[in-house]
Image (tube, rainbow, N blue to C red; front, side):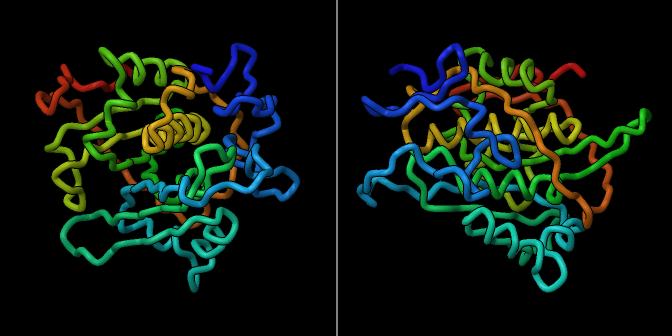
Length: 270
């Protein structure tokens, strides 16, 4: 199969004879995977698998230092609950006093064939707490989420001529940008790029699932079994108490080099 998703929205396993599962059956609490409720299996494959085919998939989220209390919770209650329910390892690095941000690293040992990703599940649960919030004139709160992505993997989010990022913006209605090097936080490495997602919470959630799903397929070298257009799944809200409202001003970016060129950035026009 060249695509993981058929036109009808059914998920096809990459192996011959894999079951076809309606997409709605996989919808979970964050609109991505259904596995943590206990009623659905986390994998389409019930047969034992070779543990050597699993890989440690990780994501890095930039979080304002002012939001850390809402991420960790009293006595670590919030972060421990997310760890337990998602099955992912979550590390908060706030050791650097230089700058206003800290780094949250989420990781888990995963099989690509699994329909449930502990790493993506944890990222989606953390998103409302890690994001910066600003209230628009309309009274609607906009969430800005920032991810650090290695330069070697950023291409899977851009596509030829910006086709992938443009289509993700169109589908999710989110403001998705690949920021220039001068906009990187101090906690970033030299070979990092920063992806910024902005929009209402449900819009930002859809965009996060789209982006992290593509990064996961790229990490497993299985982009060939992922449709160019990952379906946007319905969002079910989760509590956001404990986060502070912060103003964040995104900037248009211009960038050249490293094998690809950004003309005026890939920021949307809204």
